Length: 256
Ligand code: PEP
Image (cartoon, protein in one colour):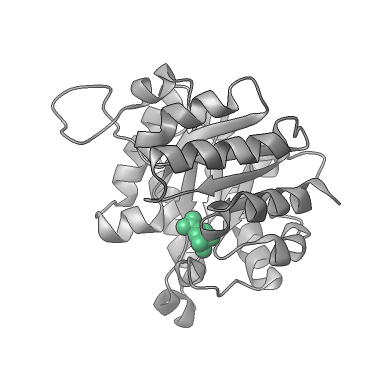
């Protein structure tokens, strides 16, 4: 395991789980991982379940995060929620620019950039998602696409602030499809992402920034992905919806 970077496994529950189901899932995960110090464990339920998850993991090593937020602090933005609101329930993390937000809700790099700055200013840790579509990969454009997303999403963020960002490389073709990037494919692009961060900030930030892999990651394929030198954890969709599969995955990240 990299001594420099602590692994981070985050569960993105997406639009799943009622409040009661969330409470049970968080309680089951907490039972197993309350004292987990080797890996940062983050649960990202829907907004309606943030409070029950907050209560369930209170005073443990398990943290929680939101799946989205608005860049303004308050005001007439019907249906939105701000960094201040998230901090008011002691939320630590927020996922930003997930490919589903980009493709279904029109989030551009510019929007992700505003949200990332607002999250940092609001003392939240943004998990900024990037990744190419199948079409872009087939056209060998994946590096160019990821570089543009990084430049746009992180524009104007200085090196000190960038240290607090977590990146999630999620090839869109691997999300929820059961198709996983090979460890070699993932490592190649993670190393590339780190080189882009060195250009945008500096070598120290690039060496320290954590880059998660996301896309059909589960306990059975996690070891070989996490064994890659530039993969520092995972952003987990499907396998995060069941306590046993999520805990097993975290156990893989803890071992080695
Ligand atoms: C995700 O949506 O962030 C994700 C990685 O989903 P899955 O693990 O289901 O592919």
